[in-house]
Amino acid sequence: MKNNTRPPVLFLAHGSPMNALADNDFTRALASLGRRLPRPQAVLCVSAHWQTRGSALTGMARPRTIHDFGGFPQALYAVSYPAPGSPALARRARELLGPQTAIDEDEWGLDHGTWSVLRHLYPNADVPVVQLGVDFGASARRHFELGEKLRPLRDEGVLIVGSGNVVHNLRRISWEEDAPVADWAAEFSDAVKARALARDYDALLAAPVSLPGGRESVPTPDHYDPLLYVLGAAHAHDAPSVLFDSVQNGSISMLSLGFGLPA
Image 1 (cartoon, rainbow, N blue to C red):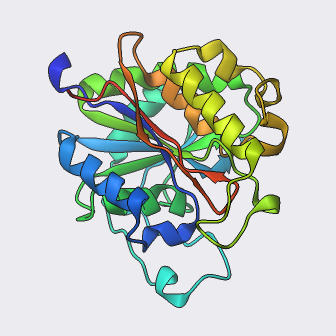
Image 2 (spheres, one colour):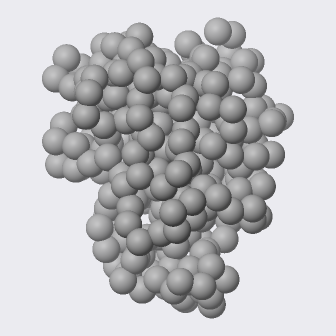
């Protein structure tokens, strides 16, 4: 693939699973982005909702749609995202990540961290998808390095997506989507955005508590870590851009970032 058609790398917020069904500013932004992007050969998605011991990839030809949540309307459980998998991409990604990387051919599939955003980006579910689990024992630097290892996939037509939320504190959540935004949530989300746009990756790889509002914004790193894979997969010359920026439910940042988007 020529560099001028290389897919970008994206960090997409997913927020509440209800965004999968919603027609709001965020989901419309995803749909618009999907129409802008060159069609990739496949998607490799790093989802906050698949925490693994070591790295693991989905390797089945037909990944199932996983409804990994509870207490939501029945309509959400009826959602299916029947995108094909890509065993060949899983093998290629393992080649890049190392032979210790597991390929899961039976147990997992596509969780809502993946399908809730992809159903707006590619509503026809016709782009093959492989999901990469987040190694919960890895350091921030290791997540970044794994993203670097995956970078060659972009020259092979693969769109790399990280799905999480830079601010994700469910203990402080409001069930009103447009609830007033907590000061600490806005402060931390703005700090991450500023450092991403400045390519100050060292600051983003440091402990989140080192940034304003970080202690409350990142009580656990699971939803922050996918951003680190995205930073690693970005080339130094990939221009960063803000795809969407708001806070839902008072304490869930929907900040979404792109690196290397076409002009």
